[in-house]
Length: 190
Image 1 (cartoon, rainbow, N blue to C red):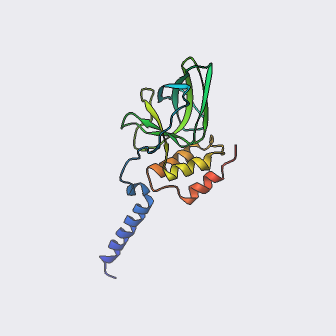
Image 2: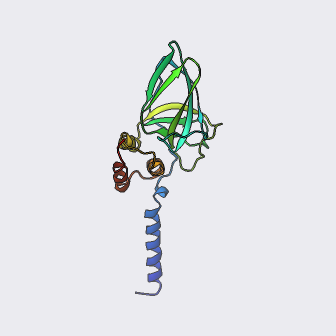
Image 3: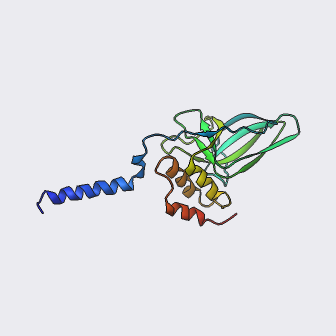
């Protein structure tokens, strides 16, 4: 082996190691929400959805404040399904997703519900109170649907960081790996 071949081989091995360790290099575009439209129960009027850094939900690493009201009766209810996306109105702010079903009830007065959500774009900003969102769509992304199903009956409140990483593995990388699927499956049931 010549003296110039050994450094070249090492350089190639380092490059391959870096390429396989940096799975994010293989994803050329930023995640954008796609899927089927979602609307609240017709007895509910949506007022606004905004970032919320004041409150915490055990069902998401971050929070959104959803403001709505019942139209005709004293109260109106609905369920926001796991896999529901919240589309950011700014390209600089992350799109968000709820992974667990979230029942909501509104009175005839404007009612605020805090939603536990996860970020879908690692390289964008975390939502602030001035950031607004549109409701939907219900994701058609197979990886996000799989993740929502994996956590559906799991207690995730003590592992929100791990679940957030799993979302980013789907939206900003090459998808969930078996180790993450196994780790989430091993979380305690609710």
